[in-house]
Amino acid sequence: MAGPKDLDPSSSPRALLGAELRHARERKGMSQAELGQLVFVSGSYIGQLEAGTRRMLPDLARLLDEVLETGGFFKRNCKAAAKSKYADHFADVAEIEAQAAAIREYAPLLIPGLLQTPAYARIVNRAYAPTAPEEVIEEWTEGRLERTRLLDHPTRPLLWAVLDEAALRRETGGRAVMAEALRHIAGLSHRNRVIMQVLPLSAGAHAGMAGALKLMEFEDAPALAYLEAVRKGRLEDDPATVTQLRFLFDLLAASALSQQESLALVEALAEDYAHEEHP
Image (cartoon, rainbow, N blue to C red):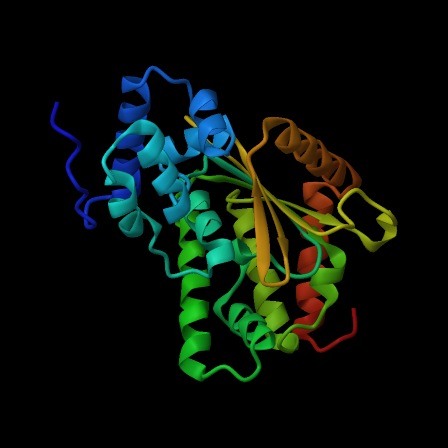
């Protein structure tokens, strides 16, 4: 039997690589869980690779070639599928969220990337790298703004964001930048493009004090969770762990203000920033 053809890097390489992986696995008569056990990843991870929502990295590609006897096919072609303009720790997430049917996100320290304005994103990127050349900051900012274009679609993905009041009161980039940023969020809420809640400072101790959380759900692949820290992050695909993190998000939403109360607070803060009054 002829082996699979090498991929054309210009023709959705990740999706094609996933289809070839499914074909090779089924030819061997293996389940996703069985293959995952042989290459030291979970069955859910194999499912994400086959669905084209995860990058196949070189070490894993080599193992897959050995187990599935594909003659080095995956190792040769994984480079095309792994290319990304985002940092390594965020590359999978930036591309996965574009395929998600639903995204639920809690942001404790800043306005999340999908809701940022250009001015706010630029200030945040400069804060991360105060000595970086201006062209690098612009490249990072454009990458972040490209992600926000997901919201140009009228209904997909469902975006549910719980914002910490502390992030809204942190004067990032000056009062004019904050006024614009909060009005942008309010506009998305008015257009029913985002479910937005604010977790108030008065909530006290809460379930998300350990850090940021993003949950992504798909129509034809298992759900994923992303936990982020400074310059690094971790994707979770273990179903039990993702279920626990979904419960954590539900607790945060239950502790947050209602959508109407949240919108009123965001609009009031925007007016305060615009009129140079102290919130």
